[in-house]
Image (cartoon, rainbow, N blue to C red; front, side):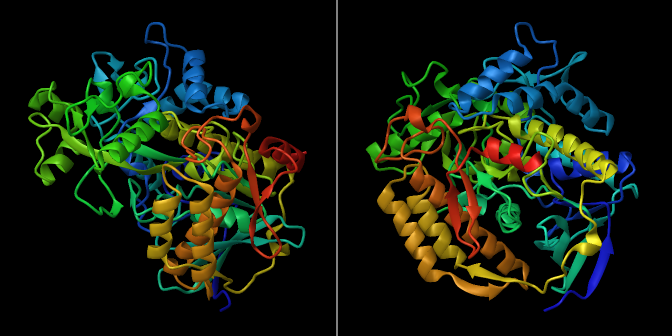
Amino acid sequence: MNPCWDARADLVVVGTGVAGLTAALRAAELGLRVLVVTKDAADGGNTRWAQGGVAVVLGDVPADSVGRHVEDTRVAGAGLCDEDATARIIAGGPAAVARLRARGAVFDSEGDRLARTREGGHTAFRVVHAGGDATGAEVERALLAASRDGRVPMLEHHTAVDTLRTPAGEVAGLLVLDAGGVPGVLTAPAVLLATGGAGQLYQATTNPAVATADGVAIGLRSGAPVADLEFVQFHPTVLYTGEGARGRCPLVTEAVRGEGAFLVDSTGARVMAGLHPLADLAPRDVVSAAITRRLAELGEDHVYLDATHLSAAEFRRRFPTVLAACLAVGVDPAATPIPVSPAAHFSCGGVVATVDGRTAVPGLYAAGEVARTGLHGANRLASNSLLEGLVVGTRAAEAVAADLALGVLAEPRLAACPPVPAAPVADRDTLQRVMSRYAGIGRDAEGLAVVGSVLDVSAVDRPLDTRERVEDAALTLTARALIAAAASREESRGCHVRDDFPAVSPDSARSQAVRLTPSGQPVLDSSASPEFTLAVALT
């Protein structure tokens, strides 16, 4: 099927979460013609589900500092954070939050200063929040309101399929399907991927249905390397709603533990006792792994989060979203511990990009969860995700404007206008089942090989002519890339836990890049580190 319609812009942004809308607004301020594309409604992404807040050092908390925030991030990242990227993103936090507030976001306050909470892995109270536990919803509301004044055109219910590329491999536009499945092309010298995460690789996740790794697949097909895909963060405390829970599960924000709640098992024993200096506020990979071990020992499928020290009024004020979810399943957090279990939450890896969003492919940029900037390493520090989206989204827009001014981007008319492509598509239910069983918390060589075999047997080439097929093809490709990286990393580090290699290997303290072969197979790029590969490409 050939494209039937077209549109033009200086920058096409794929995604309407914190990174995408921040980039679009900044690009519009810089005078660029911007077009935003999202496969769902504008507010249908992952950002609005973020509960905890934005981790940022504003200078008004005694003894806290940017350096301390950087160190907490590095500790959580288990030796794989890029130090320069981490320092630059965290240092950009205060200005990013100020811009967001100028665009209308309202954060909770205590007197004349912003209220703070503390989450897992943080050694200080530095997480600003909104609506108690509805920070993402407020961030999304403010950014959408600022975008809908005519400055940022949006194509809702339009699915990104693939980039348009010149004979030299430069990106110069995007192939999309409109709401009726009719293909069209958006020609532009710059495309920014801000598509979010990949939670739908698993049966139970905190992510909405749109989190199907679309941007990772587009990046790979465009020639960009991806890295750190094996590091999938499982949030320790997702509301347990019954055996066999599927799809998006209600999150119980880490800030509940920041306010003094603690984990216990069915016998009343503390789960985190003696396991980490920060106990229940240890980094998420540590807590999720501890819960998983305890459940295996007891032969059970959930533990409990005891927040009964908080009064009903205090819990309602600080955590209205969590309270509503609990009450919906008959749990009163002020009177009884909350049943919880881990679920897939965040992809620490993605398309390799700089802190300015540039990838190894000219004309292709990435920001937010879809990107691997080096901030998160092997495990993301709580509430650093909204921070990254705000900072890198702004910087990516400024990088596009600079690259356009320098004339280093491709002329869109040189790009080929291909028909709708075909790609391997596996059955989603089968994929989610084997990924959850063999590629979740606790992996081994045999199980990862099972995932690969199942995908090989079940995947069938299909034309990407519907949103569902585009999503399933992205999940299939991303799952293959993830298990290739996970099988190669023969150690346990951060949120990558190998049961057959339980120790950290000092020789493996580096990221792994994955590329596509000419035949479309994801393979490890062992020639150089992601940072070196990116530096060479941008030289």
